[in-house]
Length: 106
Length: 389
Image (cartoon, chains in turn orange, red):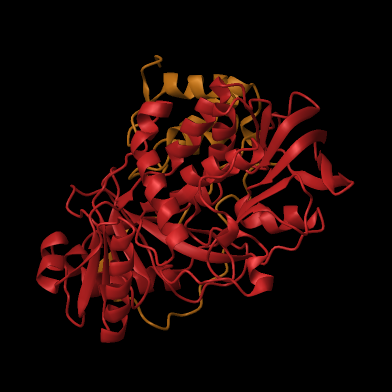
């Protein structure tokens, strides 16, 4: 991995960009997302967030478990407007389910 | 989590700004430009996490009150200078705002508003449906009766506003501390003397309350009651497309709005039953309702995919205009800059200028009486009629 290695392909963010951001004091993942845009492109973080979190944890010399996780937003997969517009007007209640980060970490 | 905070470096500042959003950082930058550089900006979280990071990026001058038009016009001029002034690109694109209406009654109000706006130097005009269809490719105007259009209205990407103003203010000596929460205010002799935070107390000569939906709580710490209420509004973004949509399109019958940002994504939200809450969860109801309106107005977008949805707060006042300036019932050195009711980002450049002028002892270049907190008690509040989303 070189400093020019692409970390986030959607938003053209390199390892170097990430290191500079951390050196500037952007310490948590929410900072990094909002400062660099990592995880906000078409993949919505599926391709980059884990790598970026690992890198951030290493740069800060803290365990990965101590890193914050960015809020993953619905929908999990992109859905066309036409499908959403045709959705049942009175859907069954949504099932109880754990949040995306429950069960993760200590 | 460890090591997140950037606590204040000193125990005393000339001015402390609570809230590191577009409004707070614009004020800090304008203070620094006036030579007041002993300034601390405090935010309780990461930056760009409040309304500045959650809004749709619209910047318009089509308002129904003179004071809002004035703030919007001068702010638009400041946005045009932003990149050269701060070195940060806010992706400003002046494609205009197109307001569609479906009732003759509303069209009459739009006609009146357009005339009012053009008297104040805004290039708004009523347009027919064929012209609306030319401006918005694929627009289905069935059921519409007319539209208004101002070619100078714009969209920006709001996030770099924060980084640009922060960097420019820091270059001039301003300090920005994040992940520091204000827990109380100490007052003496009708003035705020200290802010208490979760990381120690900070003394100040001036306090600026510019923390959006949390402003009501900070004001209450000084015994001041603001009428602001946080309303939950939802918004979504689509996958990026080739540029095709120039104006911000608004349907006044539903408060539906959609624009295409410079990344190619469609960004949109709509009116509805906005609950008073700080719960920012997303709902399927919004996705469905927005998608239905999209299929009605822009049926060609059927195959376009929704990428992400989220919610945020409008900090809403009874007349949908902000509370600006020093409140008579509050501390004499506490400046209020809140209650922006969904249009704080778009007027943040001028609000920064006005509040900095106030703190610097200069005469604010726009009369602040229309924004005084006391207007609600005196019955002088004149409601802004063009709030959407």
